[in-house]
Length: 190
Image 1 (cartoon, rainbow, N blue to C red):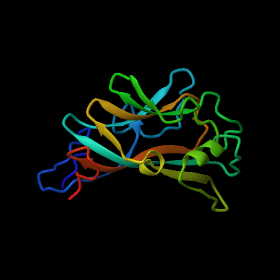
Image 2: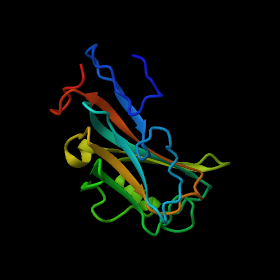
Image 3: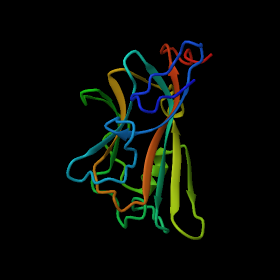
Image 4: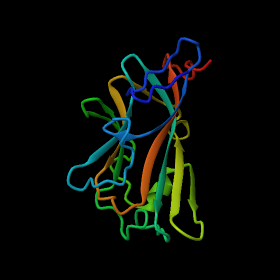
């Protein structure tokens, strides 16, 4: 399988009967390249998304995050910004036109490290003694909802940044799963 990183969204070759796995960072407006989420979304919210090309289906099994910042993360702040976020992060499923289909934070945006921890099934704080610390975690959809999340053309998995996160060293979110040919469970795998 050859990946054409210049083509976005990526169109997998399913002709050999095998379905490529997905490990994809969310990108600004699903552009495929701008994945650093330490942006200023305080005036104009910034949408970081994952979507698929026409005729494709993605079966997402998990999503995760990596948040890197100066040492000394507190529970009641975001990263080491010194305070909780004012507006917080939204995690959503939307139609291509932005119509909200699902609000995974149920009206309570994520504003602190403690809330990032609460939403994660597997989480860790790495402290190396010198330099930045890193908070990372992963959420498995079927553990939370009982099934994987299916994204087909016309739909996007989206995280909305509504605050100024430029003070963070690094902030990325990503999805994991596989490209499918149907929506009945794991029918996309051989």
